[in-house]
Length: 389
Image (cartoon, rainbow, N blue to C red; front, side, top):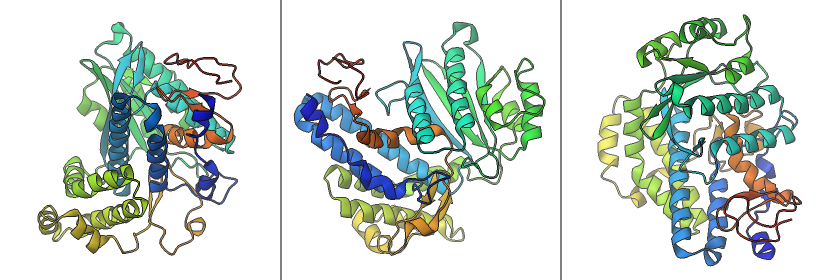
């Protein structure tokens, strides 16, 4: 098994040109389609070692994650006001349909990745782990069945890579946990005052820093409208209807992009990605006739859209998780010196690829990351026998 797994690891040196930290003048793209290429290549290499049903499951999971990531990138490109993520509760841990592991593990891996790459936001990133652990504890406790949990994420210091101002509202809905993320126009003092109303028993100091807000979730029974008013929902951000219209407009290109990746046609996938960003700009930035554009575009075949939008240079945008562009004819290292992610969990998937340098590798059956040198004789998740250590 060890030999087979070694064939599945990714040469992370191909990603060093995208690496970023305060000590490296090399950016990570806000959405890097090369990362998609690598993940689909890894899955393709696993095909012969997986049962057909398991390969189909992983393929569907990867397609779903890629679709969600692409839609999220568009939301960040135009500063989406609201977004939502669904989680399940399994063994008192929150899990996402996009991952085969508890989401806490994704956050921890992202934090470790950032710290190993010279992060200057270590306290904030460790606070994310603490905050998520508390959210998970509250939402899996029957005593808080009807409670909402709010985490405030203020903009970091001037030199921080976390420059978004937002808050998350967590609540149970039947068998699911829904996390709703909202852009906010509040400042630190307004956040502090809102916290007093939402949770009078909060543990915040009188002069809390960003990490203090993040590691101290608020337990509240206030209504959604009260929460949004107290935490100052940003009225200038893209609203939900605009976003849904945009997602519908790029639907055919999105599906074509995923198919191109699955078929190993990297050149086509890159062209579709370029066309998607250019098309989105054309619709959103031309409000005088964007309804006409949408109606015409919805009738166009993907090939026609690629012909129209796939060969132009993408407008560079410093979005939520970094720069969005296609880099045609540009030096990426000259365009961006900082990455602005929402959460340390953004780095969890990237860490999986870079773990190839350390020898860590995914279990071929379930994808659980196995730490090189740990002396493990079977996968801790699915118990597949191996000589992993």
